[in-house]
Image 1 (cartoon, rainbow, N blue to C red):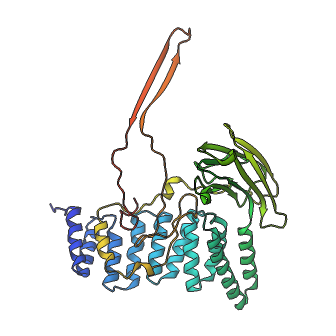
Image 2: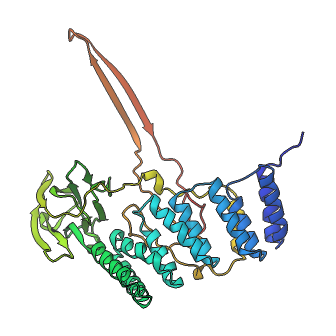
Image 3: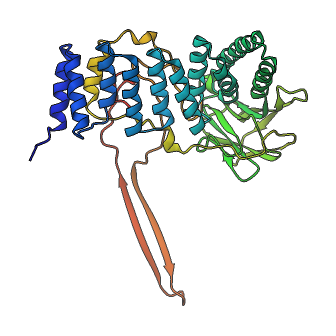
Amino acid sequence: MEKSLKPDVIRDLITGFSSSGQHAAAIGLIEASIRAGQVQPWMHEVLALSMELDKRPKAQIERVMLSGVDVGANDPASLAFLANYFSRLGRPERALSLLDQAVRQDPTRVELYLLATKIAMANKAWETILWSAPGLAQYAWGADREEMLKLAEAATIEASTAFRQKGETATAEMLTRQFEQSKACDLSVKVEWNGAGDVDLLVDEPGGSTCSHETPRTPAGGLLSRDGFGPRQENCQEEYVCPFAFDGEYRIRIRHVQGDIVGKRVAVTITRRKGQTDADETTRTIILGKDDQELRVLMRGGRRQVAAPVPDASSRKATRPTTSGNVVLSELRGHLPDARNWPPLAQVGPNAGGGGGVGVGVALQAPQVTSIAEGVSMAALAVVSGDRRYVRLTLQPNFTAIRDVLQFSTASGPIGR
């Protein structure tokens, strides 16, 4: 009976071939392993990089990367990773096709529109601008919104000019109209304060959903675009936006979480139909108390008719392989051109648009922030007998302790972790 090589042995052999520049040998070994059914999650990516270093045809490298999607995760993060790779390989049409597929899976991810817009502008793929520029204007509501809007506006102007030169005036006008509509916002609420404390903004929307730091995106189209805290003044603000809102009553709740707030006062600015001819803005000063302070806003003329898609939290987790095969990837990347020349991607978290650039060799990071309880807790369930003479208690103690915390940089740390 034929014995299979251990995964560590294959990895060590490929690492040795890569470090000594024997890329053809590494390619042969990986292909033989795949044919023998000994596939490891990192193999297709390593195979593609080895083929690139060995000057293999781009079409062959493309087939390898697409095969990696077939056997691995076919989620927006993986598709964005591949799109960035194909753009670097000089295959923009394939990259844009993958980004279009990713946007259909999750239309709320700002980085997909950003990458698609940049690739489309660089390659004059004006058809892509029809959906990427309005999408960027509609979903980029983070601290870098102004920068995103400038890029989307420049792309819209270039694409509209190109369509008019081809005689497609109707398409150019449609793009301009969609871009202007995407910039508008039916309802926005901004809370600002001074001091070292923390204030939370919660908005109860028509239909029963609540937008808060725990549920930053809702089916009603609401988004908590900024979740701030003191003492730095630029961080002392929270903002709720609903670009396409349902008609109905919105209940705004202001909660003093902790710390000192100057004057125990916050300024609340409510804007309705921003960017439209009948825009309305009001600012009120609210005095904080022990309980939530409430304001009610009646929205009329909202542009939303159906519920917005809300992606699963799990869909935003990186799914790149987390194996020791990253040793091979690191070795191969050392032979590649300077990664600073690769097309950039924005790093965004759950609030869409709040991050900066990514590290060398990293295509996408979608950090997940969560709370971990530590200490002793206990749940109790009481059952009272019918004659009220006896009570039976079921006790469930829970002991939780955080043991090891490992830190690493996003540029060199394990992919997807």
